[in-house]
Length: 144
Image (tube, rainbow, N blue to C red):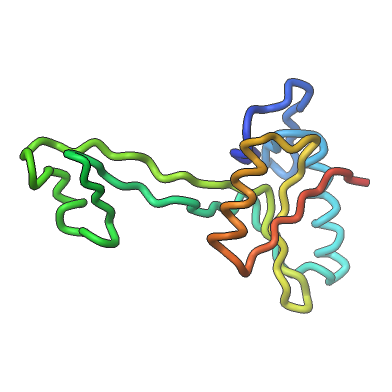
């Protein structure tokens, strides 16, 4: 599985467990740990690659920004009301974590397994925690 926290580390080896392809051996080992915790009743749910929107997509033309929330009709139409041309779309920025884990006591952890934290990952982590204050992203650096 691949999180979009930055460029892949060259040493990471894709690993398959339960017909799921993980981006690294360390991530696959964390999945196995979580499965054992689930079997023991500590964890009730394991979600792989939960996705979060950090910034929505928008259109921009003639120095005017159109987004789906503020100007839904114009955004959907896609034609600039100033010049009449088709407006280009700026893609949303998304973050894909490695796991979202629900524990038996009800709390939820969002986890990312990292050998090293890239600058892009650090920025996305800050934006994620700002945009979703109820989420704390746990960075797993060592897996047993």
